[in-house]
Each structure stands twice: as C-alpha cells, then as structure tokens.
Image 1 (cartoon, rainbow, N blue to C red):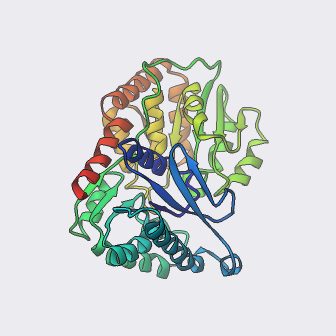
Image 2 (cartoon, helix red, strand yellow; image 1 turned 30 degrees about the horizontal axis):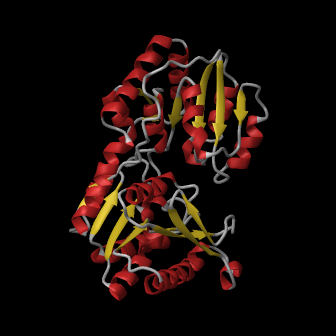
Image 3 (cartoon, rainbow, N blue to C red; image 1 turned 135 degrees about the horizontal axis):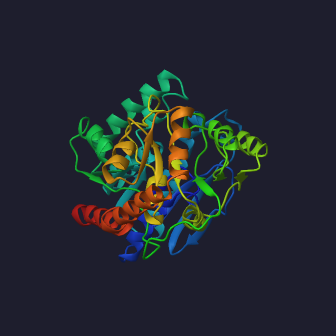
Length: 369
C-alpha cells in the first residue's frame, strides 16, 4: 500500500491493511511522514510501515506540489527494493491520487495488480483551497492514470457514480464504517446536554462559528478534539472564552468512540456549496451510529440524505439560526434524542459496520488474484 500521511492517523487505511493481514496476506504500507514524527520503519499490529521523510531537496521546496514528484520517486524506489530483496508482492494498493502515479509505475515495471482507493475526488477536494489550474490538472491526471488500474475502491454511491462516468473499470464501495464496540444501546448520562465533536476543524466545517454559537447557549456543553490542522489554534483560543466549551486538543484514536458515547449528540456541518461536500459520507456519521448518538448534519448533502432516511439525526441549513434550533430541539426533547440514537445504533448493527465493509474489501482481492 501507498499512503501520503504517516499511517498512524488514518483509520481507514489501518482497518483495510489489518483486514488483509488477518486473512493471511503480508502487508507493507509505504507512507510519507513529512514532519519526521515517526521512525523510518516500524510494525503496527503486524502491518509493516516504511516511511519516507522530507530529506535533502524536499526540505527546502516551498510546498507539497513541488515535493510530490520526489515523494513518488522515493516511494517507488523503496517498493522496488522491497520487491527485489524481500518478497514479490502481488498487488499495489494506492490510497488517493497523490500516490497513484507510484502504483502506475510499479504496474508497468512489475506487471502487478493495481487497486486505486479513492477516499476523495482529489481535484474537487482542493478546488476551494488551490489554484484552478492545479484542480483541473489533478482531475485530468486522475482520469489518465485510471486507465492502468485493475479495480477501484471508493467510499459511497455518489463517488462511485462519478468514477463510473470517467472510467470503465470495476468499482466497489467500502464505506468508513466502524467496529461494533458496544453490544447494546445505552443513553447518555451527562448532567448537561453535551455535544461532542472529534475531527478536522476547518472554516467551511462551521468552525469557529460553532464555538461562539454554543458558548452563548444555556444548558449546553461542547467538547472538541481533533488534528492539528485547519483552524485548530483559532478554535483552541476561541474555546478559552467560554466555560461551557471544553477543548481537548488531539486525542488517541482509541478514545474517539468512548468520548462520542459520553455525549448526547454530535454534528458534521459542512458548506454544501464548496468542494465535494454534497457527495461525502463522514467518519462522524459512522461513529455516531455505533455509539447510538444522534447527529446534526447539513441539508442538501448525501450525508444529510442518509441521516433523514435512517432517522438517526436532524438536518439543518448551513447557518447559525438553523443549527441553534436543532441543538435546542435535542436539548429540550430527551425522548427524541433517545429515539434518534436508537435508530442510529440499529442501523450500525444491521448494516453500517466494519464487518460488512470488510467483506466488500476482501471480495475485491479475491477477484483480482
């Protein structure tokens, strides 16, 4: 596998690698550890991780647009060395567009099978943060490289429909569902209605607006944790203004579900008019399901549509008034909160859990061997 982050912060890739390992496969993940946060090589629950660091010229280049080709070349060379000196791997599994070129080079060189795992539509993801040229170039590059893949994996139906429109290859959905950590539904026991959010904090994710909104509400507490990206520092500083907002910084992955379950509800608020937000399903949604907690989601998105169909949360317009009304509705109606939470937990047990998605992943490998 190839991944352009250090692996330790990517639950999807970990779960996929571990699923393949548990089926008797040998799995190595070559990753890009830009900040040199981890050792050059390690074993994580039986999965071998080899890390590329920003050395030499990579350290002085202005940004990752320029570093990407060097990362591809280094990762390619490490994979060739692995193939020639240790074991002849059968499949190359590339996570997102910023690794796919490596896989195409290896397929041409070694005639291995190539799986492309599209967590995002990369060109759409960067549309509002990068130049138009880079966004368009990414879309064109992806379409060209897709000609070489053997199978495409992606996260939901809108993504599958998009890729089916540009490439004639087998496509399988593997959603970011979570393990069923809890055997039965249990209501929250907090003394005050508590919203929990653990994840990326960005401007078009309603941050830091949600801080000021909840900070000025009575009978509501907000607990926040997440990666040191986006507006992390701004959210941290905003949180200090309010007694009812608790900022935890970055927490271990193992604490995500217990913390989510300790609250009454969670939320994923995205601007439906930017990036690929209309098409996405989110980790927050599946975390809420396995914890039996309702979620507040933006209307006009695929995530909002799922929430409405499963009756596992409330959908809102992307503005303060609508979000405030939803919070108050859940705060003042514990019976509704429990009903939505039970629906969420039922959906997780019956369909939206990792055991189901793992079978989809393993079937891909059975078909391409």
